[in-house]
Image 1 (spheres, helix red, strand yellow):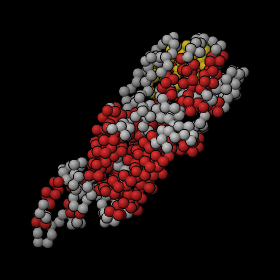
Image 2: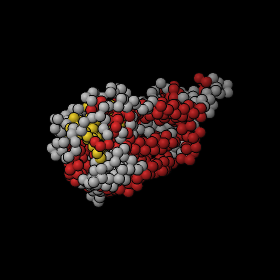
Image 3: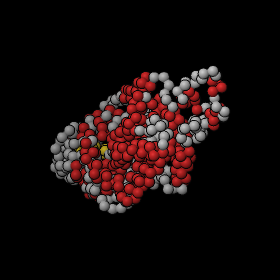
Image 4: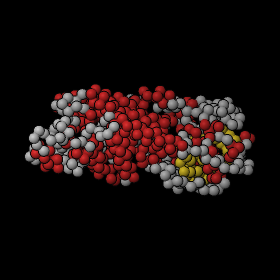
Length: 565
């Protein structure tokens, strides 16, 4: 395959459009060795020696070799996102920031790593674009420095999502990153060879509709490589050169002027994205809740999650009558402990037990929360079903595993997280994730905008979230054999589960196919009602479509490297 295979005619270099010169033919105009030079750049990846005047792709190949070596020697984490270390800028710098935030043990180490990463990224980009060397360096430095703060914000939101197990922050980070990358990725390759200038390249990129005819196929290939890395982690070091090869092909295509009508191609690309989004949203329909069951014996206790309050939280809105319980046999857990009742708020039934509690009570020490649970289930009618939402999963599981709540006959895990793979150190302490932890404390107001009030240094946060794998250690404790357990997971939470969502086996009887419902609203959707009734009636969960969790390998490479990666 010759360089002209990438959409540029030979005459585009000189402006002659390949026309014969005066008194001669096209063949006569060719200089000796021109045919041999064209063949030298044979393929989209192996063309490290390109047409005269074009920079080589050897710097990208050298970078891929270094990243592969560092991965094989354990210097860089072997996690699926490593294949993005040789992606088109600025995704490569985003990868560096994710690693530094998750691994740097102190501020000086983070700053030193950041300076080194910027130096490498600026030098490599400067070597890949044409023009006088000083101007190339200036272009590459300005490009990366402008993008540094947006990328740092996206990487930090990504870290916070993984550390706090809050999927809304993850999807906000990925959406923001997608916009930044789509706007910035084509810019360096549209610069004028004689004088690379950022403003000129940006204007040309807009006129060429952001080169979506190259970027969209490229990101599709990159997603495919990420899927392979997620499914077969042992291949990660060897997929880095593959990722670099795809990036090299994209660079070659982006260097050539687009054929046809760029704006029309851009419009088609935008239409494709809109159609895909419409299909995704349109296929999400409400499930049939199933028939209303006969009244069930015993009682049910509903436990809301972190950041809730008396009568405030989705699980208070659960339609208990559709689960076979009336208000006389429905009880609500209080993080403040036993009492004579709480404000009803949005609860379907009056709250006649437990003390009034506020969000701060949900962040008390775990031992105190476990004590409160043990006291409140002690005298409830049996058989007792406990439905624990999110954070409450760990509290109920801990109490039952310790044998302190023998009254519980069935446990429904609503939106459980099997593990907490990313942590952060206490304030002011140098340890893994120091800078990310400091920024987390600064950016907590961002989470507040998404209705998530959080104290990073509260006792429960330090015990369960700041400590890596604390959640998995709790769920690893076996429950009594006579306690039935059902797990109901939200599909939006799946990217935060690096080792999968299935809990069945051991103490968990069944996993419900991940519901296409946001985590906070799981308890109030018909699909949840249907699955809980099937479980209480002794029936298996509904069949799970094979495609339900296909998006997980696509999204996980954009996460933060886990503590053990």
